[in-house]
Each structure stands twice: as structure tokens, then as C-alpha cells.
Length: 158
Image (tube, rainbow, N blue to C red):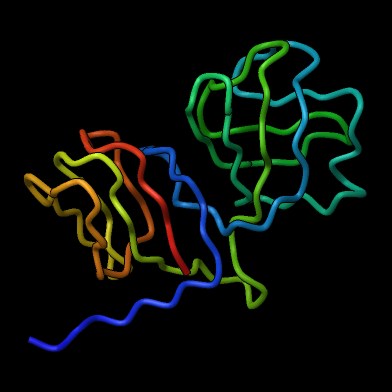
């Protein structure tokens, strides 16, 4: 069997989510929310319009390890999300949802701690890899790691 040669140039820790894809590792902004509104990210210290936030960008709530997609830029300080993941004082990172050409860039995965891995492939197939060992590279083009995943410490590589 030939050796797989993986030479990633970008990497991102993955938060499994059924409602959003793995973001590109291009950070738009990171900060802390300033108030709680259902299905919104509110940060009165930022101007999301001047930062170039777009529908489809992805928010990682790093306080509670959940993710959501931006569905609307409501104002300079408020974004609508496809899930209710933010409360006041939660830390977040806002990533670009697409690459420079505007498409979703599939990645390969590294699994730090083994378990089952439920993913959506670049072709749109939902599959579960059972019993992935710790320290495994998965050479499948993936766009999403779903919450049915029991493996942890997953890193996306491009």
C-alpha cells in the first residue's frame, strides 16, 4: 500500500456541529459578546459591517464549544445565527465560511482521541467511521463533523 503524504498548510480545531460546516481558518474577529438575544451574536464593541462579515460566515462559541452560521448581518453590532449559541460574556471567534473563490473548502481530519467519527463528505454523504483510533489521519474530503461524533481533539487540515 502506498504511503499517504499529507502536507497541510492550514489547521483548525474542530467543534462538531450539525448546523454548520467546518470554517476556513481565516479569523475575521474574536471577542466577547456584550448581551444576550436569542439566535443572535451581539457585540457592541465591534462593527461587523466594516469587518466584512457575510452570510455564511461561521461563529465558534469558545466558552461552550458550539458553532453556528451567520444568517444575516442585522446591524453593525448584531448578527443573526442559525442556532441559539451565544449569551452575554461568551467568548467567540468569527471565521470566514468560504475560501477566496466563495466556495466551501473540504479538509482532511486528524483525530487526537479515538472514537466514532460522524462526518459529511465533500460530496454530501453522511457517514460514520466506527472505532477510529487515537492519532489517526482521515484522508477523506470532509466539510462537516457532526455531533454524533464521540472522537475528540479533532483537527481540520488544508
